[in-house]
Image (cartoon, rainbow, N blue to C red; front, side, top):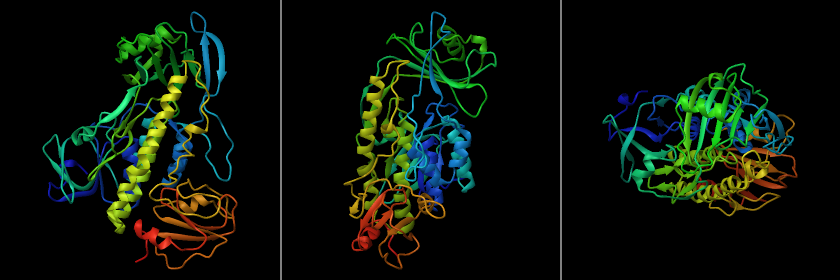
Length: 488
């Protein structure tokens, strides 16, 4: 659907206008599409972002992709994290220390995907885009938003070509330099994590370049600052080049010629062994948090709401978790008549989480030394993130607390995650009598007692968190009313 075919205001082009087709925008469009919510996804560029930038999909995000139904494709396009390998000596060819940057664990019944997966951001975006198109959605490219207004019923967005689009809600997924955030006047509060400039680039190396595709190669002692080459899955000889500058006043050269010169200066790879520079950018790491994630009918997600250091690979994953939280709530309000106050819980739940994750990535960045990064443990996997004590955590039963991530479990046929898949709520009855006639939105399953949950009734939200629990059904009806899931 081209933007010039979209209705002009005051007609509605969609229930939800999503600005920005990065991982957050695409994931939200996918989630809304499977909920039957009319969505318009726009992107000011003429194509999806071509570079890797983020390249780690953490275990909790893998669970989201399983729910979306595309985990098999993502895993086929990704790989395990390669071992880190330091190179030493005056010409950077003396083999040094090896180690694993990500702590690995074995799958369990509760956690089937315990380890991070490496996949370039552009590849992940392409898979999300393909899935979106399979659901009937699309991205409208070359649609640059330049202004917006709100009233009691909708948001009117204006674009550079003079067109206007009216939608009931707008979601800003347009990155750290968000136009939407600027138009709203929402400030970012943060700090410079590191004053030293950095450069990141995707490069395709020739077969004779002296680096293998089994390691993440590091040159910590390179003149001018450290450099690394990390192999990326999906394209033969594709590597992410990453470099830090010792001089805080240095100005990195992100042109293809500059990237080739940098590689030749800091690694054994020569300029002519870089067959192609796919993409390159320079940046200075900083951490910042928007003062609020909502302004009326407009929501901020992903980098538009929080900007991270790349340390710990938290930015992309936190962005996907934002939209996974927001998507079902928009669906409940727009499709099932949930009270509009349900949307208030997006900021209430996600802003504290983003603040905590920002603290983790900033600490990891400052603790690390190039070529000496400590192993990343459970704190970066995002499996422990939850909403205990939050506005949608109610009741008590068994071994879990409302707000916790709902663990998986092996069943005689399939697993609990299979019961959760889809846009519905799930009521698990472990050795307890469930109520009847809860309606189509709540899928009820009577199961044998399971120690991970304990005995009782457990209502799993559409985003895989325990929302309500009880030894009896008392209080369940009220919770379903609040979330628009009551029968009727």
